[in-house]
Length: 259
Image (cartoon, rainbow, N blue to C red; front, side, top):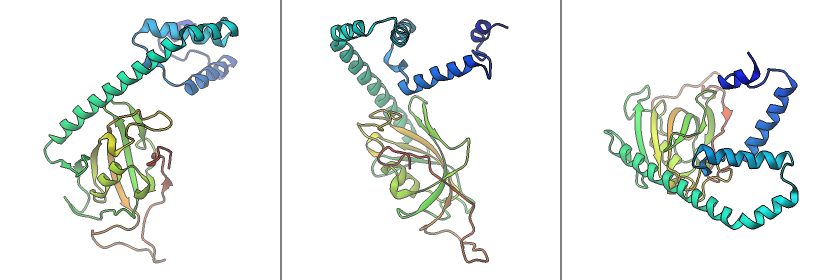
């Protein structure tokens, strides 16, 4: 099968281990640095023209002087378009987030916390409903989590790998408040309104846009320290609490940066 035929069928576009694959990887790397431009275009025709502009600039088809003239002539229009479409994206996300959070609130058995965070326990811990160790604000916890936005975009997840360990004091308010209501061993869904997440600024890396309502599936595997309640704690021969080895977190902190 030819390379063109492979591309058409969705298979690898270049031969594995070849020089072409290395060059293709360079293109992928550059595109990842640029970021996803698809939210800023409305259809395939627009995306094709944007792609042509990128390629013409990269390969020198459009001379430096012509680039400057084009941007000087259409720069103001371009800024207006980018701003308008960014605002439209934010509004769609905010609307979808509010609707999804409201639907979650109407689910039987959910808890709506004081600041609008919604907690729905899906599976109880080994000690039964409402039983077991709970974390405090001073606790370090071991957790699996899967974070999405209202449109289903996954922005972070540990479910394909190892659980993470981190102090609750360092995470966003809604995340902290939700986990504080959980018991060791529980699995729950957590809905966090924007003002209890990353607010009107989003995260610095753009992964979470401004005004985003966030949804997490959380497994509270262990309260590592400063927990309250629950049954007796088992200790090893060395006097230390029996616990599995853990890794540092990949979760974003309250400042939007990885912890």
